[in-house]
Length: 357
Image 1 (tube, rainbow, N blue to C red):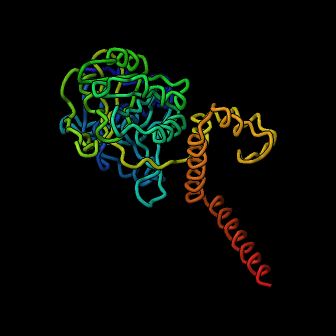
Image 2: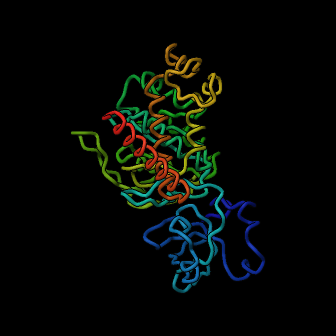
């Protein structure tokens, strides 16, 4: 049995509810989400929830629908153990990504999250460039990123791996864990207990479900072994789910991520690549492209070994991807990109025409 406060209810959400709404509806948190089917917790009970027709009709986009972690106002039917969702409260934070496939649509993964555990493991899943992408999205979400290097039992030289990832995780808490041996789990548990609501994100097979089971002290999530041939994971978590931990704190487990498309992460990129941003301010020219310009502080840092070319390339690639995504769903940006493309095409045609004379 839990209270609303155990679930994360605080004055930020309390102040959004009017007296008339309190008389009609109960505040509840979304603890499980399927296809427009929800499980809600009011603290003392859980209810199978569906959207009210008026709520669904007035929702502007799919991203505005409730997701795991959202707080909603619902009318409950105790006899049927069901509830109807009438309103979603404003979010304190939300982790969003671009929807998978060719769709240019925002997909909200989790809402009202205070910290996000970015879980990778000591095998072929370890990828610094992917972690940079996770960090940009997390900083943009408003949550605090935490990097977890899991499956420490598979590796005897942790420090070499930590040294590789340290330059991209400056100022970000990092834990080396093994849910199998228990290494690092006590420290991780203490951190989660003090963090409010924490979400786990990572590829399939990095051990998120095993971490969840260790944290809640039981087997709640099915665990499937990774494939020996390529270290690729198999989805054992198929839906997002929220848990109240025995020693305090709220945890959201998510399915393994195969594709992590960016979604409006301009501010998140500046935070994730703070080292490059700091250097860029010292460049001689304000519009420096960090290539061959004289007085480029970024190029100098690469020459002196303070910054790797791969990190700068990653920053540029993510910037281009973010600009492209924003242009596809923002009409004015899309128009600007089209106009620029036409201008470039005309310049190329004119150049070819003059060269043939």
